Length: 514
Image 1 (cartoon, helix red, strand yellow):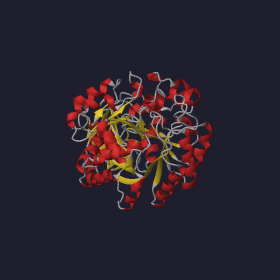
Image 2 (cartoon, rainbow, N blue to C red):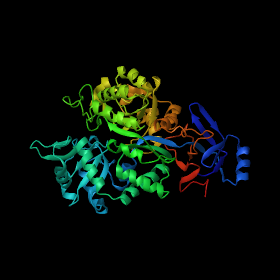
Image 3 (spheres, rainbow, N blue to C red):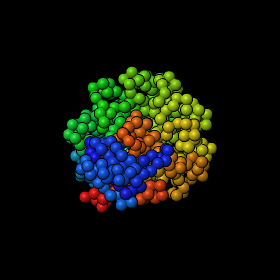
Image 4 (tube, one colour):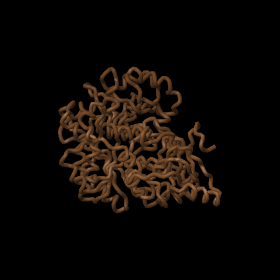
């Protein structure tokens, strides 16, 4: 727990209500003095605490990403970045360039068939010749589908050929596209090939990326046993600095009894799935997809199974977070929480009918949304049609019903940079000419609403009421920025990140602390 004094700056201490000051002092990890520079300087000199002249720079509470995947972000950093690919032909170029750095599996993330000039999904024939003798796993941007090569198809055949989500050619042979159940099973095999030290390396890579982007706390979703062990080892080695609220995979929820929560790592709940994603056409809808009229999506778990897991978690004093993107998936979640209890979480809630808002309000959930989906899902009107497009990503309507809306990136699905998320919430793709803006501009957030959702509201969603604002007695988590976040946010830069009064990141070109 560190101590530091910051003076001569603009410090946004809270976004709801809106408050700011000129200085702040963190003492033994907690906010001790706010506002009076002379009082701060006198106390700091007496206690021999470092005094930082902010030189008119700007400070806000650390960003809290309420739903992301620390392990998958690390895999994305270590793997092959496919987010900029716009052609199937480019896949082999990327594989050939980087395949030798992989020991066992070749893996990468981020492709989106909607961007491909070929206007089709890739298949294993597109990559078999360039992926040599190693199995390959390329996750789609939504983390609900993957492209695999023939070697990986052979591995999957040995697991279970009847899993949901193994796409087939007309002759019945696998195409190399896997979704949902098949995706999860093969990804599990990939991860089991990795030892604990490799897993710890991946987690540290992700942690460092979060610090560089001003993220000080996270809701870490779908934590498996190997990752939980890795986090505990990093904690014992004093290498885990990011504040984590962990949501376990349901099969290991009883592990929560064996682990004592602390200031940095706390098990807060479990993560379940009601459906899939729009990108893979597996989000569960009441009416079929406009661009796939025979398809209503995928029910990942029945509402009875969701309820059973929710009740088991409740007995362990854990909250439940349920992924639900389509409106039918949300119907199932409402049914579950009407029986399991209030103050649980709904993840994504991407398409909500008008009749569902009052029902959601009654169960008082935390709804954790990803505003940057608006940018990535630029094709969404093709999926759901113009009439239903007014139901998509209804952030403002949710808060108008008194529902706590928290922000996140679902990283590595979306960029971890919080300012991209802020822009998406405030402008809803207007600057990127996203067609959805025409139908949903009434759902835009004000700048204060956006920052509040990313700080205080997210702190409540991850069950941490000791962070999210710069207030006396709360944890000393903040970031120093080079520009005013109220005016110039899209290209803002994080200069310094502080957690518990300790500096965990300094930009190489900052001139405040040496």
